[in-house]
Image (cartoon, rainbow, N blue to C red; front, side, top):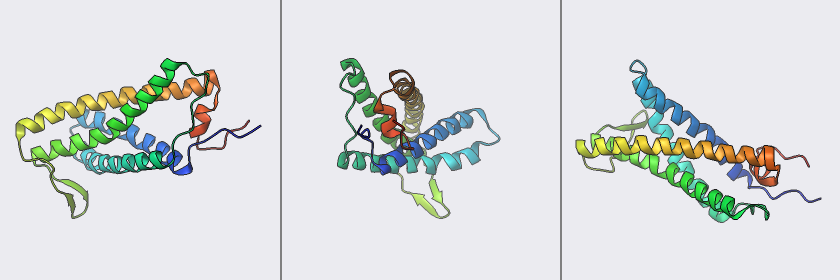
Amino acid sequence: MTEPARFNWPARLLHWGMAVMILAMLLIGVAMVTSLADYHALVALHRPLGLLILLLAGLRLVNRWRHPPPPLPTDLPAWQRIAAHGSHIALYGLMLTLPLVGWGMLSAARYPIVLAGPVVLSPILPQDPMLAAALRHLHTGLAYALFAAFLAHLGAALMHALIRQDDVFASMAPWRPRR
């Protein structure tokens, strides 16, 4: 029996590492809007982590382009193939868009994005309080969308692992699957 096709190790490393980072970002974002006492410490984590996610999402796209994912099972219904493809487009789009909108929001509000020590990113938009407010609402809405896409992705992964018991989950698992 042949071993199932798997994502390459950089894809698996980026996938699981970014899953942890994205979940942390979503939790930090919730904590930021609910905690005045810890707000500045949370923002100091949120900004550079968002930019790291942006950078890693770009690396994931390059890796995915150079090393296409394993094929889906041939018996997977068409609607599930379409849903899988659409959810990946949504996830990648949100992983790229959310940090850019956050960067634009902070640029328009003229808040510096300090990466570490004296390293500060340049603003990408002109100062405009109305634009900053609009981007803040957009950033929040996109964060909710990312959370929904994250949960849908998790649900689909669990469905493949526990119900269908096909090779889809195993193809991204960080460990070598048993046959």
